[in-house]
Each structure stands twice: as structure tokens, then as C-alpha cells.
Amino acid sequence: MVKRFLEKIKLATKFWSFWALLMLQMILLVNVLFRAIKGGIQIIDYIWILLIIIISFVELFLIDAIFRVSKIELEKSQVNGMMASMNDAVVSYDEQFKITLVNDAFEKLCGLKENELLDKKIVPEMNSDPKYMILTKIMFPSLAPEMSRLSAETNPSKIQIKIFKPREFILELITTRVENQYDHTFGFVKIIKDRTRENQLMKSKSDFITIVAHQLRTPLTGATWGAEVLYKKELGDINPNQEKILKQTLDTLGDMSKTINDLLKAASIEDGKFGYNFAIGDIMEIINEVLTSLVIRAKEKNIKFVVYPPNFAVPKFVMDKEKIAMAISNIVENAIKYNVVNGEVGIKIEQIKDKPFIKISISDTGVGINEKEFENIFEKFYRSSSIMKTHTAGIGLGLYIVKNIIKNHGGEIWVESIEQRGTTFHFVLPTDQNYIPPQVRTN
Image: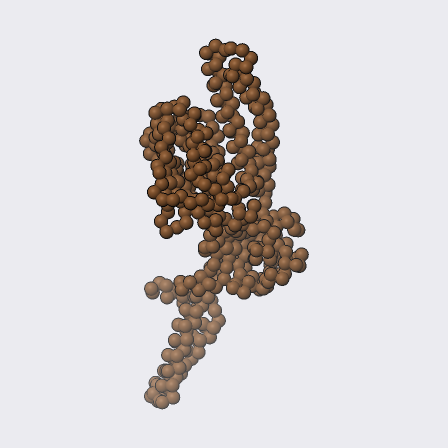
């Protein structure tokens, strides 16, 4: 504490006001001492002593104030230094949308100088002025031609906007409220990440994948047709070995076709073209259709389907029937593919208590997934290590597509698994269409 006080005094000695008070205090003190030695303490001397004490308190207040102001200035300087060194654009503003701080990256993004921005109150009407078009869309994202929320309305919030004039921008806005310990908001800080180049590269990659996939699809269709003609013996009898080889060829061509279709679906998701067509659907009917279409494949490994009867009346609800069938089919196909011979695939439907959601669980008795890989299993091109050991084919797009479908229905999906004992995929779907994301519903 003494050390801290000495630091405050050392800092105060740099200011003339401290020395002026100290000098006045010394003059008064010398005057009182001189008068005391010469003729004793008079009434006026008590006034001088009181004044000296008051000046002492003023000095202490001044020392503390100087220390606090210097600390604030130091913190402000540190913040300015951090902002200046950031590649991302940063702006801070108060509750009246008056700008208080910007960095160089923000000036370049908006095409405005610091002196044109500081202390300027931004209002939505400025959007009609070409000079402030970018700035107002950053401050008021709803003014942008395209806006999508990347996170819930929390602190911080994350939003992506697309701007077409004066040139095309795709910006990610992270807004944080500046609050005190009593949750009083003093202002806001926005970090603006320019995703334009990143999105252009992703689009180029997506376009390349789409073109290549379409180019591969035509010869693959021809090869599949030729193999099917031979396998069905339309050109004459074949011996058992030839039949076996043709069956393996058809299976390989089928896997290749699925891979190409998955690549095209993934490319459509990235381009925002994986459209949805919502209508009332029957989830039980969809499950039965999927299982019927996969029963032959399950019989090849002597795998049994077990559908647990729901203990409630499963309602019909709004969904994209084709996409939900695709998601369920993808999970069941994996449950067959990565299962053991004589294994089992179970499907259970449950009602979420007090919420307009149903839960569907699809389990298998297969190779399982390591717990450490749960959070990565839905990522694009990711395949678990346990599956890679026994099934080298595949590119890891199926669950990525499934997650996109479930999320765009307003649901959630997660996995539970024990290696060598099986895996269960759980996902929930809303039975109330108001839970479907608005931007998906209006596609």
C-alpha cells in the first residue's frame, strides 16, 4: 500500500498543480512557525493551520485523481494500440450511435478519415448518401440487401451482411455491448471481418467441384448401364465368377455415384442453393419408405431392422419430405455399412416433454466412434478413425449434409457411441413450423 502511494506521488510530481499546492502549503506552514516562534499562536494561525490541512486533503485528492486519469489514459492508449494493430476493422460507439473510436482498417473499409468519423452520430437516413452507404449498413445491418444471423441475440452477437454497392462485400459483424458491473450499457464495440475474398475462394472451389462432378456423372451413368445389361444377362448367360465380378462392379459404381451426388449436394449447401420445399409430412411414413428401400442391402449382411412403436400419436408436421428422407436414409445406410454381420439397426421416436419437438434415434451394433471425435463427426470431409480402419472408401460428406438438413428444419443432431459396441444418432425436429428458420422457410 505504501509502495502504491509512493508511485502515486511520483506520478503527481510531473504536474505543476501538485507543486503549486505544495508550495502554498509550505509558505503557510513557514508563516505559522515563524509567528509561533516570534509571538505565540494567534487565532489567525489556527485558520492558517486549518487551511494547511484542507490543502493536504486537496493534494491527496489531486494525487489520486492524477493517478486515475493517467491509468485511464494508459488503458486508452493500450486499446488504441491494440485496435491499430488489428487487421480487422473495429469501431466503438455510444448508445446514440455516436462514434467514439475507430482503427485504420475501419477507415479503409468505409473510405472515410478518422476526423470524418469521430464524434459523428450515425442515423439510418445517411444510407442514401453514397459517402456513408457502407458505414450505415455496418452500424444498422438490417439496411443491408442481405443479412443473416450467425448467432443468437446474445452478447456478443454475430451477423453476416452482404453489400453490393459501391462494390460487393461480405462482412461478418461481431457486436459487443460495453457494460458495467450493474449491467448498464455504456456503448458498443463492433469488429468487422471481411469475408469477401474467403467466400469468393469457397465459391470457386464449389464451382470447380460442381463442374467436375457433372462431367463425371455422364460417363458413370453409361458404365453403370453397361454393367447392368451384362449382370441381367440380357446379352447371354454368364458364369458365376463373371456374375460376382459384375456385382462388385455395380456396387463400386453405385458408391461412386453416391459420392458424386454428395459432392453436388455439399456444393449446393455452400452456394446457398440447397433449396427446401416445405409441406405437411408424415414422419412415420417416411421412415417406413426409407427402411423398405434399404431392406435388400440390410439382408446382404443379415442385419435386422427394429422399429420401436412410439407411445404417443405421432403428429404430421411441416417439413421438406424429400430432405428428411435423405437425412434418415443417410444415417440408416451408415448404420448398415458400418455394422457387423447379423447386427441390428434400431429406430425409436419419442416426444419431447412440454416442447413442440419429436426426437428420433437411430442406433446400430457396429464399429462405433471414439468419444474424442464426436464434435468433428459432422464436419465436411471428416471420417472417424475407427471407420477408416475397415472402410477406406468414402469422403465424409453424408453427415455434413444430414446436419445441414436437420439445422435448416430448426432441429439439432448429436451422437452417442462406444467403440466396438455401436453408435446412436439422435436428432430432434420441431412439430411447430414457427421453429423453422425464417430465411429457410422463405427460400
